[in-house]
Image: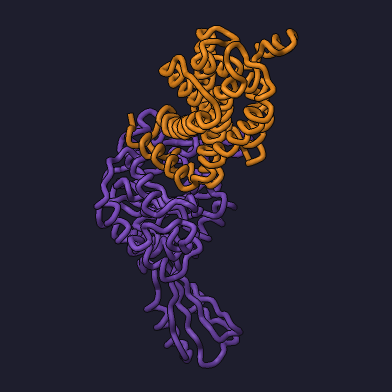
Length: 309
Length: 253
């Protein structure tokens, strides 16, 4: 898949010498959903702000659909829609008024039918004449999305799109994002909710301290870095671990009542069959067996912790 | 040229004006009526004519300019400061808009509003005094140019201001005194000679003088000087705005 955004060795240093991004490079493919994960202050919002033109670059280049965001800012920005993290809307303006403004700002001719369709899809059509101040937080979030979609962008940036919204609305947002992807829109989202990235992203980029720690397909990431754990509850506690089991990498826990074996998700080096045979030969009585797989959250924490080490 | 963006900003700003008609139109009109009652009727009856112009008529151009200048600064500064304050400025900064287009939208709307208020005050004036305008077209051009010029100044103020206190600081402590002392209610010739010299350093004086010339054919300084002053101020303010956008000062991190 071709890259629609190419970020090349960008650095952002603020006036107080704080380095927000350090020689960061990343490619974003056309039509994908990529989630930027990282702790607070990692540089996620700075990266988005630079691509969207809100923050100036100290060094490096960013190309959007082959267009330099500084030299060709008009064409580059017209391809981008941005949904900011904060609910920043003019309180006295109506829903229709603010969405119409957005389309005009991006140089698009009036298209009432399109605006109607966007507002209907976001369940805002009935509220089109309402002042923003009368809307709930969830509706304001949807107005921000309507504004970003009003000029038919090829790329949509969502900065913490589900921060502070209830579970139902979060699921609605996820459906909406998946529909946008199906219509060919590239979606870049930052999130604190690992579950969100796990649910909707095609690829994950982990950022910490202004650097990209990793960019990987979600499934590959889960497979490559995901860990599985086999837990075997014993009928009677063991006073010590038999040598045959110890040699297979098993540990004894929970006062001798549990055998633990860690292995990789891809199963290529798993010794589960040998372990079960060894347990049988040692005449150890089993009560229960279960496995657990590490989540994206576990992987994220591990990556960031390693990055900080 | 992103004409749709200019139109979108202009329409949005004008809509804000019509949402608050009392603040936008009634307030300056009531203030002007009070000025006429106090300066035109109460005090004006005891004032000698200035040249062959009655004092009540003499203050009309000054009153219009006073309102147009202060309203232009207030409209444009609030217009750009409010999106900054709310955070909605993100959309303008991420849109394919050049600084010129942004200025055209905001300053165009601010100047339009103050010119409309200027016309309303002129209409109200006819209720109080007998008035003649010798150079109607030039008066109109001068009014528009002044509104544009002070709207540019207001736009700079709105970009510069970090809070509402700063937003009010310049109009209250700088613009209003300059306009009052620029001959809104008197001829500079009426001042002691030392203060006449001081008045020559007041930019508002050139604009009020020029507008008054368009009404009565008499002025403190030649009309050419007044036009030159307007162009100089407009050029200076455009230069400052260009610098702000180029550097991203108080706009982009």
